[in-house]
Length: 148
Image (tube, one colour):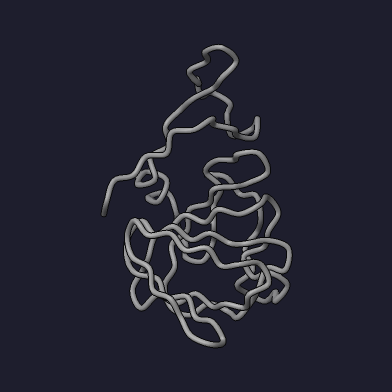
């Protein structure tokens, strides 16, 4: 697996940040986030976990394998950044395949269905509160705002 670090202003809920020292300098908290380390904490597939926030956007790590459900996000685009593996995103009129280090943005309102023949690890970037299944719902809907 490729090693990636994200260096950004680290915003965590108070209950998550307890006991962690952040490097404070000129009213700026900075910490690097190891995507590999965060991925290793994931226990189940299809359950995105928040690792950072920037403004109203969340960065979520997730492991996927198999077929997801058809869904859309009418209010927002959805960004998929593959860390390891290969992800195919199906659309009603075709598909796109992305690999490690590649980013794809699904425009808001476009129905799509992620698929991974083998386990893929990726980062999702989307506004806080967006459900992974959009308005489709169902058993694959993950709990929102779960931090690791």
